[in-house]
Image: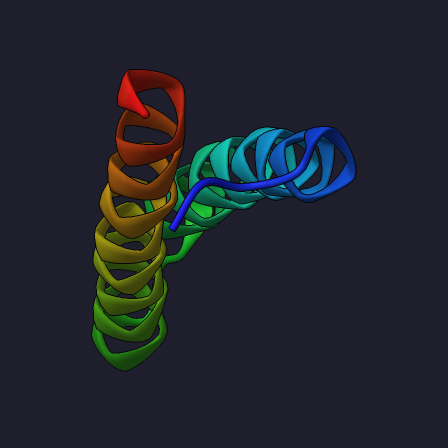
Length: 65
């Protein structure tokens, strides 16, 4: 099913926000001195990276239709 222009714009906005969150969490992981905090930040960055791939898949699917 093709996305509407508005839906596509919302997905693109989510991609930008997710990219910002990934950079933020990676920065937090670099600054963290506590191993558990560092691990949580790294895991959150990985989780958001997975979300980013899902958003990109939706964009690619929508633009191919």
